[in-house]
Length: 280
Image (cartoon, rainbow, N blue to C red; front, side, top):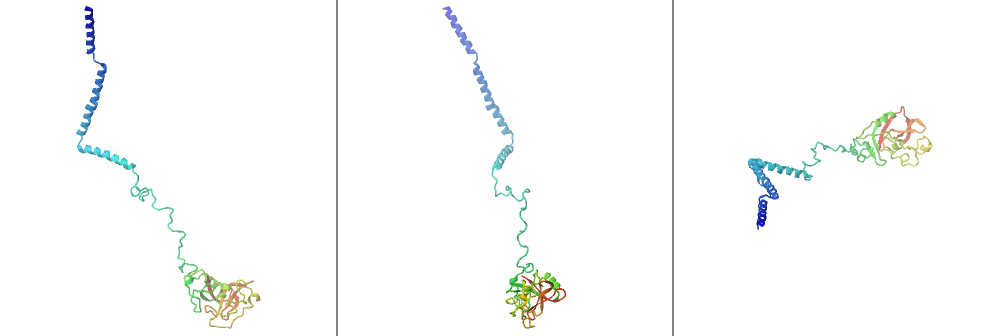
């Protein structure tokens, strides 16, 4: 009996001791909970309230606006460029890196004529369609529509070299590029003389037949002398120079005497006759 009592006392003692010793897991959990409460509920709450309470209201608003502005700027940077916005257009002419003019663009068109081709003062051929028809009224420059030749005024009593110089330097009616006519061209002025005008089939004097032989001249009979100028489309009555030399004779040149519509020749050194210039 006494032994049982001692055992019971021992058990009670152990139970008492066990109850008095704190549980390590409980203590550790209590510390952790306490720290957690302090950070989240105590210190964290105090810092947040202190910051918001101590700053003036306008300062707090400024910070908030700055944050919003930064956010807006970031959004704007990511936005696509509006092609219609001149401030964002990369080809804006105010951009110093953008050329003000296209260097490849010519200032003038090289293919554009610098002069009006219909202007008689600059066109070397001239407006032949506007020229008067050649007649015995001797209005020049004129155009002979039957041959297409354009004729100038007459130079009287000149040597062949002077006649040639006069034609080369002539600018009549705003036209230039004149020259002495060949014998074939000068012959186109003959009219009213069937034996020597260009329609004749017997008189063969031409640019291709320049010899003073029967082959070229046998059929070139002159017409009756007439001082009215009826044998010339321009009313000429005397001798006119051509630029065609007699074949085989450099010192003589073919001429036409419009007094009788016949062919002749003259010295290209000393003789002096009239001359007209031609252009096509």
